[in-house]
Image 1 (cartoon, rainbow, N blue to C red):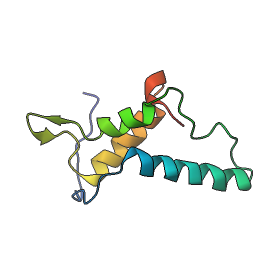
Image 2: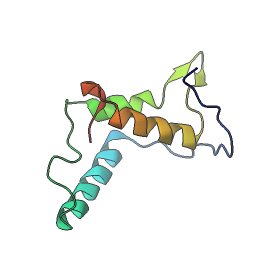
Image 3: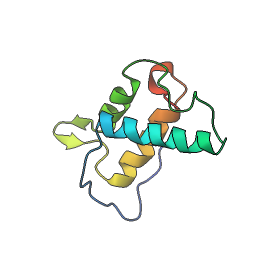
Length: 93
């Protein structure tokens, strides 16, 4: 069916990451990796303006008042998926 059952611990979300905090974390990662010569200056750049904001919005989606990704694990998994997804508007790294 193309889906995996969610098993194991489901920790509640205690904070929400915003676009500014995510951008700062990505910039710091890029700088650290570039200093070690493990990445180029393209790492962490948005392919399309607003892509990061859209990705962060995607992991906060609700349907009928219920979060689609209620646990920190589900949000993290989907954040990774949306970041590496090959569709141009969804990919930033």
